[in-house]
View 1 (cartoon, helix red, strand yellow):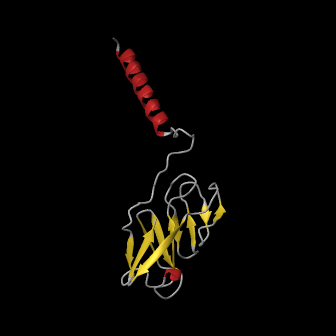
View 2 (cartoon, rainbow, N blue to C red):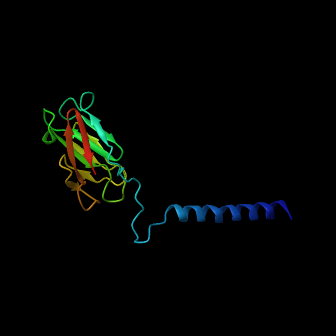
View 3 (spheres, rainbow, N blue to C red):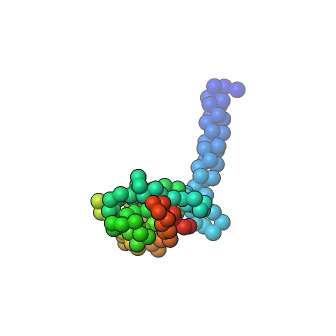
Length: 143
């Protein structure tokens, strides 16, 4: 086999392997939607210590697929909100912007208000709001 034939055979095989890998990476799940990137923890143990975290209004904690924000003074459930950090469009993790009090999905550009409501798609719904329970100085997010 000549050098040119060898290289041609080698690069042809390599190209087929690359195309197969790319096709698998871009595949969708059975219903045609992109596979979710992130799913929040369903463990009932997601807690925040209010003695050390979320001391000022608009402070937030993003952890385990959830975002908790202090909206008012006082350690009552009404002083906080919690949302799933999973974008309802494709499952990417949204980010909270404290300076604008809004959420942004960096994957496809969906934006959400401070109440989790959809401002701009491609998402078709807002963020899932979660229940909060406070016992002493421990805030617990109920998923």
